[in-house]
Length: 609
Image (tube, rainbow, N blue to C red; front, side, top):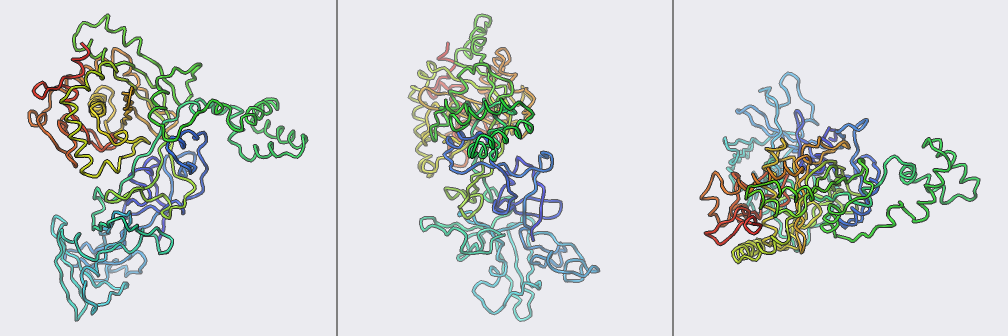
């Protein structure tokens, strides 16, 4: 049974996306793929974004509610299909009871207990991205063909202990009465399969087949299991020339009116073209001469006029965004999609008025300080994964023949800073930091992560799959700044994001907040870029890095986290909510920020003095 359910607009590219399981007031649902979505239209002015992200598909915004309501309606399906009687003395399993009529006196359960039914929140998934109902009858009668399951009748009881990690399956059919105890080893059952690619799929030939080189891992999982659903982040910032488009201008209105452009271009004679120009002038409430001027500019370069300056390089997202932040924009308008203001001169001048040694060192460590008053981020849903694989992820329309991808626009503000190349050049030559980075790189490769470098924010992290001292420092400093911004700006850390620009002659951090509202956020974060305020934040960040509530254990740790890729980094000092991190809270070491002379590591501040 398919239904329309409300979902927060910004959640469609995250935990409530295609193939996920979400809750309504009563039922659990899974969201269907884009083949069933209402028709939407491409988001304009994203040629550079698509090029940077190396996407051939158009980017379409998911359908919004009425008048831009931040909720949208998408087709979903009740799932899992199994429901269980809530009576502890009954616990009969029902298959899709919402399709079955029931006696109003006894309730949905076929027995006289009259108790309501609850969806049983367990599913079977595999690392190829598939998901299906748990084959409870198969688990109970595996190896026996004597008891045939009648889907219209309730013949299976499922009892569980308080932890939910141990089940007892019982058949109620006379002549069978089989009873099987199951525990955590249920995930290791030989022959356990995912029969459907997704719950709403029936056509077996339309879905991709599992490649021979993928070793399938099949698991029965609770719907809250971390491995059930993950969406690899893919995003890019809108930078010049696209960020400079003047929305609402005549040339913008004409450029986005595809049918009118076609009529003007293919008009058989001047009379037909003049008629269309007159019609557009009434529609746009402007003079005919303005329409003619706009059309000539578009026709001259075969596209939006600003694009004649473009030089798009596929995949070059780090360098382009880094340079866009540092390049002054002439005649900058407040309504542009990237509005920056350099605070570097004011920042450097602080050293004449600051007497504290730590504060003066902080000033020397930062080479550039940019207030990002407005930014626009495009986040793209390229697919989802289960159990950490495969690469690439399952595409939005499942069958892999999409001509468009879902994407959303987020607006916000932030702070961009660049560390001093002079300070970094000396700091990263320390033998101890080189040795630690090499050890983490070895673990990175041993875990097989180097071959599956995460692409987050449209950027490879770490760059080119190489863990360098510079990257560890930037990543850890970013986390500690986010924790300090949470205190200073009042933003919860989970709402903040980081973008790390690491490479040869490139050491930048962008910490920002972005929301699906064209008005953006309230400016509290970018205000912290004012030199006096940011100096207080940065100085306090370095001070707090010196001590953790779990020291000395934290400072002396040589490997912790999922892949042992963190050293001195725990929830007491450097970890932040995972949605805010580009790497899932990995590749962090607080000693790179604070220094540790017992390990032969000096803080970057010491090279700035």
